[in-house]
Image (cartoon, rainbow, N blue to C red):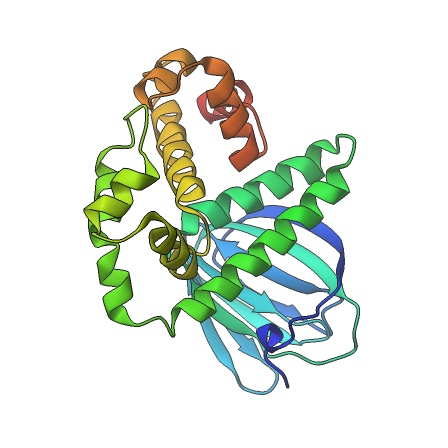
Length: 261
């Protein structure tokens, strides 16, 4: 069997998104119809494949399930899971794997966005799911590449990452300022940031802001306008645009769904 990410010319199609709450039980799956990625929000599962391979998934980990694979899932702890099934234009057999990403919130939002589009089915929803699927491939590929990045490069970015995480409520976090904190050029900062985190610094900052926005809205303490202001957005319109871009739904719909839980 081959490693899925050893093939750089994959043609993907027919993406479908799902979401489920999993309880304690054991399920069996024969000759899986599609390839699939499953992202565990919480809970814990053990996958046992027909060749004896055992993989454990838990919070913030993603598992790849190959087409035609046969396996058993033991749900050790109940939890929440998003998934995307898809097909590949080749007949190769790939190996299953589990990985944990550096910035799982971005990946989770892509799964949420895909599921929201698939469920609501607005015009062009299939393209949105495919776009997110290719982005998921890009992030996982970058994460695999990151494993070979020297530790000193990752440590080099520590001042910038710590500054970002402590200043998400700032109106502006400038790339030149972040590069200066690391004592490197802006160009080099962007390059190694992308190689380590699988995304640009701006995408990382925005994804962290939206992750915090979800937490604030979940608290039911702050209004949407207040959340936008707390996170340094100049207007409710720019906040709503970014929120929908990263989650697939508007802040209003998210807030309503959160209050209904």
